[in-house]
Image (cartoon, rainbow, N blue to C red; front, side, top):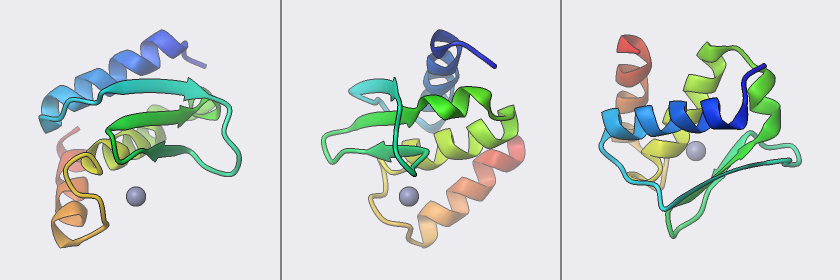
Length: 88
Ligand SMILES: [Zn+2]
């Protein structure tokens, strides 16, 4: 298990790679969801992620951060998601 601080650092590292600037990063208990992204650029991640593997955390983090650029799961979103997770 990693700490919230470590998780936040991972999110910021990815934000830097992707070139987005989340307004706020929250980590709290969530129901039936790993994460969410508000239209105002606020990201919320589930505390359950702290127990998951790094690989899985990366998937969720990159997914949410990409939503700051692409609100929907369009073609570009999917291509970039694959690209980023590939090079890691
Ligand atoms: Zn999504």
